Length: 180
Image (cartoon, rainbow, N blue to C red):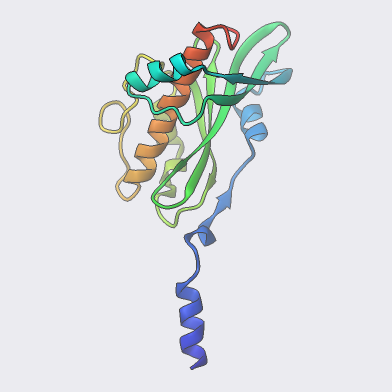
């Protein structure tokens, strides 16, 4: 009977038992912009028209309100970092995207991964596919981003999230909500 109870308890463990926190958004910003002398927190809000434009472009806006970390060296903006989360298969995947001053992706990092499978999206080779991509890139698994067998949902959802962040930053810059 005790064995059955123990097995039932093990079977009831949430998938979150596989959760790993790799770094904070602040640590990711420092990793993405090691030459930065300072980071500035900046909040911005997209208006309804900007959100509609994103939706019309095929980007599902998660929120109107965003927080960015601007990386500065002296008076020069090096870029910025936005952190976000997407659902993998069942659990949230926290990630951060570094955007260079020219609007291209500088780096993508996985901050926390909670799924039992698909952790291969943390592999540098997979994350490097995003480097240099801009709002003009498709940023779609199967187009310009390769899939990882066994991590299809994680790959697809993180890719959609990166596409969303690139589009949100582009929109915010064009409307004067973030510096260029």
